[in-house]
Image 1: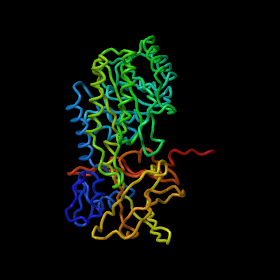
Image 2 (image 1 turned 180 degrees about the vertical axis):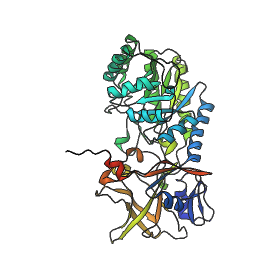
Image 3 (image 1 turned 90 degrees about the horizontal axis):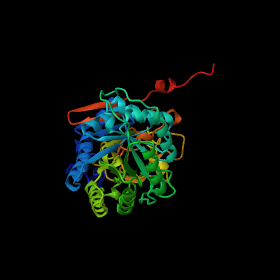
Length: 454
């Protein structure tokens, strides 16, 4: 939680708790890691995404300490690349000794560009192409198999596969195979599109297909090494995890794994996006529930303890990120007040997709009082291009900067070039320096993709 300036007006206190840990109000202006947001906007332009390393490190430490304290066997943390991935983030995962979950060839390529060791690259995907699978076989340590068709493809590729010296210099064997279970049990999320574990989900295999997949692995001599499931994204009530873990470990008892074996009950632990959602869900509570349940179930069924994997993405990186926009136009009408910014659904489609709620602070002018309720929207030709609805704010003027917290996950990774929008720059913040880690996309970048019909 951000440490708030004692002189900050009361209306800012809860909102500051949504911002990165190093956020302060200094000289009536927002800073992160000691860097003035006004100065960063002047230097790098807007829209601009900021990532606070201190917040990332602290969240990662909470997962690690919880597992060390509560789980008596080996454990690993896998960063979910789909939340946000670039070369610098991949490098950070290696400084923290995390695994990296990649979906598709491009994310595997990012991991390779960051010189990640193959054994820490784990590949997901619900419909992996032959190209994806071939790349994963050559460059990843683990493939999570989503369906029987995919498994048949892997078996076919394995029969003609030869390992030479890999990029990192040590000879290696075929990637471990984990099977993705569809437990038929969803967690409660704010939108059905963020649920993944229910019976009608497109993800994973029901129990009977998992048993058949295990048989295929053994007949094809594939290294069957683990079981995975995922129930949904941004949930707070972990009760459905209990039933899913029980079901999964009962299935493991029937299949049998050689030791050491791996078990991953996914990720998706929630994050507060709006002050109405505080207090922030506690990582320690989530880790405790999973660790204790896995130990209990394994002891009761006589299973050896697995290497336990957790896959946090959002809960690691969301609150570390802040989106910085400049207000270009203010429309004060009798029906509502619109603050129109230079970014919107092209860099953050979550409100348009899921109706996600956000909060906001002006970057300067904290001596003002709340005086109106505003709608914050972007410049794009789409009525759904809205970032925030009906939020209390002081009177914001055209040209001001605003900062939207909890912007670190599922913004840039789902961004687009709608209306020719160029994706924003990304800056990595530490106390001693601010580093550009993703340059702003340009119109020249977009035109380089295009070919003439002549």
